[in-house]
Image 1: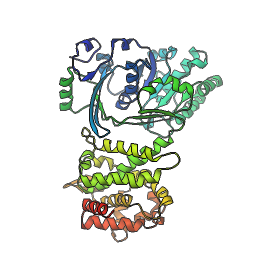
Image 2: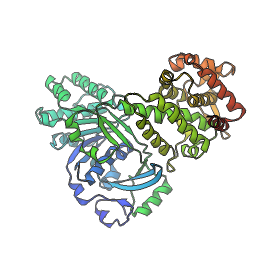
Image 3: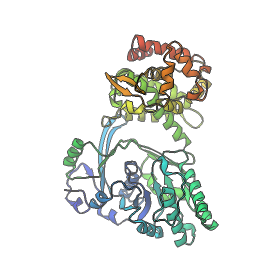
Image 4: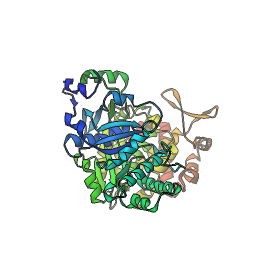
Length: 501
């Protein structure tokens, strides 16, 4: 039995949370650019959750912008899909299955462009959401008269201009625009591109004024691992458990965050779905959330990645079951990253709460997150996520950060690669893994003299944009751990360090 509106009445499984019949009659309040799993696993989940509580009471028109694959599965299933939430939350394993009915229809930008533009006339429409990848928010030479314009900003501008014309620039016709692309100040950049495109298309000043004054462009930050489709065997087992087939079924971790930047009363009123879940926050500034995520989640990933790989731990959840590694991660966050970033905006409780979430996420038994994938572009990640912590640490402390130094020494050890046919590889449990790092040749050259490699790497401003030997004791600490990894092993070094306090 396929998951469809008609078949909902025949689903008897107690495991699935089903929509009510009235939810199919809700008006279309949201225009969404993108059918990707992140959108279906995060904002669409929040909207569906609110609808089930009779709060937002609105559905989504989804625009499929790419030419790859079609919209057939959505049509066949009446746009219903199952969100499987599986993982660890507050130290306990959770497993929930929610049939999402937030999507009203899925349109192809290429085939249904005229139909999409008609939706601009909808007075119920309030929100625009997008996730078109990082390259989606870029300036092009689009003509809004094309059917459709090539870029996402071009499509959005054409839609907004059609709405402006239909409603004659009324203040009530403005929308709340929420890009979720993973770039800094995503809404600010999108708005700037739209205004530039408006100039390129010779659109009237009154429209640009309406675009600026009547519409709310809100920078956002999204954070949730949504792997997407379940592995085949797990998909079959889940379908048997739930009693229906679902080609659109996706999985997500329990953790969720959608931080939306606004101090507007109107925005909060429009985004009423934010009331239903603590994972949505509407705040005047999202900088705190960006910093916490970048340092405690991404920074911890980066500083523990080399440790895991040198220990032969290939998957994140596997590493967390190792007592020494688990202790390393916890102490790195608690004693060093957390203390470094705590300030007038980021409180100790923020650090404690997010660190607990990181432990839950790393320990998720349903995710196979491989450390070798995390090691892609290792040097750049180290520079962006971890190195900026040093200034903050040394502003508060006179001694080097122990676990930071251990993580950096592990990174440096991993960079002692083998070179063959222009590729640089490291050994992981007896197999050669290609190191995909733009600085691999430079680091390979530095390793030709092991006695100077630490000093050479730390001094190189092409890697870090500064000389890291300026930090008192850091080079000596990294060298100490580098030597220890070679003599007694990395996990033994961690255990010894923890034992000595």
